[in-house]
Image (cartoon, rainbow, N blue to C red; front, side, top):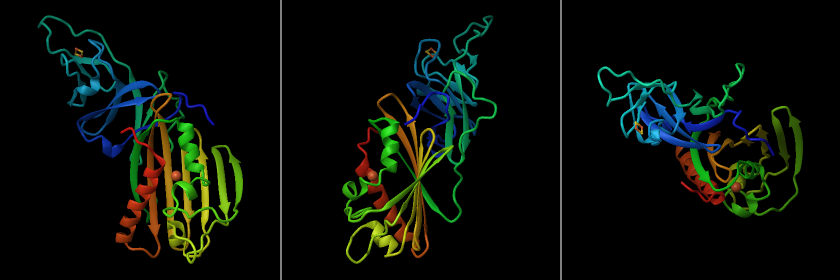
Length: 288
Ligand code: FES
Ligand SMILES: [Fe+2]
């Protein structure tokens, strides 16, 4: 489907996963990365101390720097060595550094450019700001599969009547039309005529649409994202699914669901959230 090289922006974490003065470990395209936040700013360093190779993610964040847990060497956001605790008074700090990666935080995501080369000057991560009036929530999973297969699942309507029978959709019972548009950014698929009748089927879709028509588009956005948009008279629901390959066999997904209820209250919305979580669980065998 696509070429997931290091020369792309990838989500490394949700912003809320990285509290001030904390560090986490992330594997991205086989690269072991220590992601840390000082008081505010997020930085990313190769997760290996140049002294004795201990993972820097085991260390501590102090004064916007990452201090190795083993002998306390300290590295700034550029990866430059700034302090060695066990050093003689007349000794100089070694000229030494660890690889750093460019990170940008926006829309509640921490994006990283995991290449050894800098991003082009005009390059920026995609922007997915919160939609006005929508109630949104995030879910992350680690999966033993490739990003391509996860993205295909996000676009795959045919499985929903089987895997999610009675929850999201009822069993397949009629043909629908799909209009496929190839765009520069990827592919957009509009599905027409998939409304379900409440009277004779039992599924979330039939309940939420209550015999009304559904507007439904799925979009594959190069290189690692799927965006799903449902609208009926009763509800609008979008799903943003962004994949970050950890290794050749494993993928970390970042899913942001957003719903706007035209005739539902907040409690009903929370119940729906639990149902959506269950739908997602039916799709995955999580590793973490
Ligand atoms: S291994 Fe990191 S300071 Fe020694
Ligand atoms: Fe599914």
